[in-house]
Length: 162
Image (cartoon, rainbow, N blue to C red; front, side, top):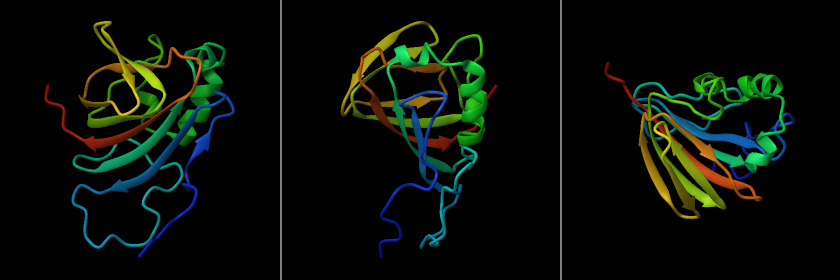
């Protein structure tokens, strides 16, 4: 049975960051039960970081960094706090784009190209079809091109040991 075939209920194109889109398409609990019920699994304003063992499936469109350079950070944060709650708070105000989450992430470039920047300053160019697995690392995504980049993220809630 096909439960949904249309726009994602919580896809959001940002007014404060032109060309930026986030959408959580699906979420599972730490111990999902099959069959899944037919209610919306990822309603608007769902908390983004998943619980330990839970998952979130996200699509994000990153506009070029030149767009991010022109936005009002306070307005962008305010809008993102509504649409990606729990995640935007992981971003560092003194290091734009840098963030850390208690998740294992499967990151797939669907379209365009994007640079992965790690906390030691190392950068890697990723192109369509490239996959990164991150294990709670501090990082940022940089779109140094003049075109949007679209990525798919699967976040799996993890426990960080001290």
